[in-house]
Length: 364
Image (tube, rainbow, N blue to C red; front, side):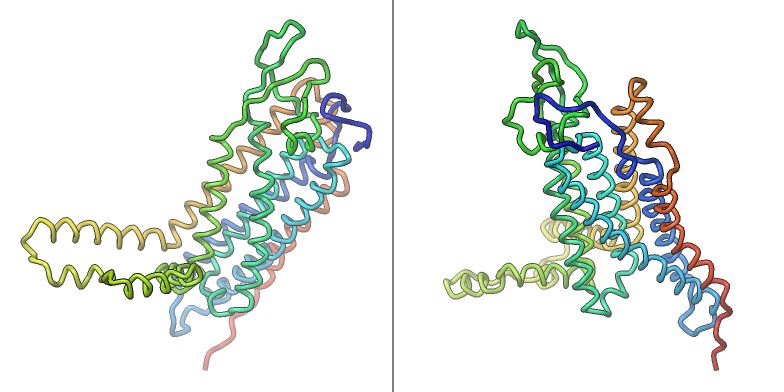
């Protein structure tokens, strides 16, 4: 229960919040993410097997059904992710505890990567519709920006916590998960575990890794929405004004950079410089091919989802131990809200089954 009577040294004990930490809520977010991953993998394989002459009508139906299901999860999760973060931020001044705040950030992580996953799987469809591509990019940018700003607080909850006793001696202890999450945004205030002051060493490694995964995944998937990696990079560089800078340098007497292919064409093929440059250029092309492939995207995003799963259950098992068995019992109860949330996740799957049972249209 949230209250307005609290501060970073005096606050109520951890209480159950099934709307955020309920088992049904967590399973709903995880299920939507992994169902989307399975659908993306299946669509990639089916599209590879489809024939352009229309002789694989059944595969065409399955591909269309998977596309509709992926789109349903894509638009659903980006809206849910923004809503979850806005709901958590609105409860900060009411004393939302650190444990449930971490859960909110982790659930928003799943929403963000579910949407990024759909951007990768439906890259061709998004390229062909400029307006839809822009809307999804803007929505994902908003969610990613909010997640980046809130991810900063995770460094405190995952850091090393030391308790300072009355005799100024310190001892390592667990982070107080009932500490108001508002305090995480104000680290210069005095924190206590309701008995002794605590000193928390910020976990820069954990936060840096999480931010790298998020920013890298979003930027690369956004760039690959263009026809190829080169076009995406040219779009970014044009927006940064690089062509104007190169023209200015050329007028100042600095020669223009030449493509590697033209340089290789004028070099002696038996020279060491030619072989070295050729090897580097070939390696670069291979890396770009692998990097732009759908297989690499799915593997990388699978790792990001697995990372999020470990974080969700690690935080839950750490915060809700034996002493919090009453809280765990409440949050493990399948109440009305838990069941409804899970049913909403299952609806796109039922829609997919209905579309797959349709008979393919005959081709003339």
